[in-house]
View 1 (cartoon, helix red, strand yellow):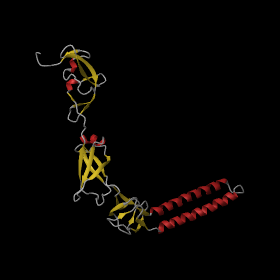
View 2: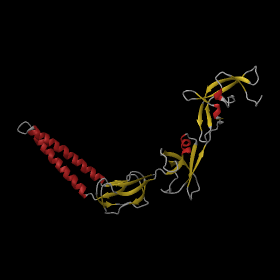
View 3: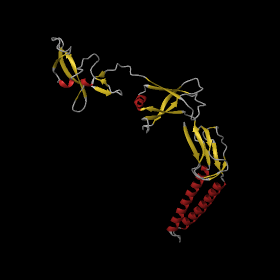
View 4: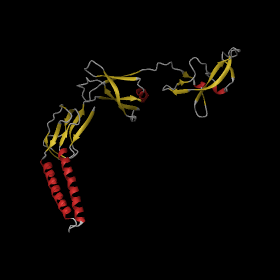
Length: 298
């Protein structure tokens, strides 16, 4: 869930602070407002100045060419533009004298009392966005990749609640922690019935990873040879129909992956059931005739 601290963009004395800690606010509700008299007076003054400058400009334009220099008209035009800006600033300040809830929110804390004089940018109220409930956990780096392929599911349980809540990934911090080599993962509760779960509540998250259903093929390192460009290859054994136990070897490219346990897994290569040279691959050549190893001296 999102937490924000609301502050006025202008300074002044708080005139209204109707919210109570623990209240649920709807988007647009008034959170606090400043004493408006000074802002209204500044706006009236700016409007009067603009009206006077506009009258001067109109009079100069009518007299232009009959004794009023063009420089005077230009200066009057500039004063009108500056007065318009002053009016816009005064209107904005008057509007900024009232804080509205930016979303449906829970009032977490009132940070000042009513009638307090606050400066611009000073936090007044802390709000929690309750439209989404997020759970932050730290996961080890070996699980980071598994969370991105859709094979991992997350569920959460809370003390005192006899149900589980499905979770989905909201975002993750693509930078490891200084200690433990872990990554922060933010999970969103995918349920409309998450009311009453407050910020800071404890939760237990269960992570389930769906293992790949394909039969895993582990290659011995001695079976691999590498091309000049670094790509991996194996020797495929093709039996000779006329000579028992003999056959020809063919160099075949494969795609491999180094697993977390340091074993080499075959990702793409010869079809299942194909015989390959499992040891001594670096000592033979492509197309060479070899015999199966059946034992020493045989």
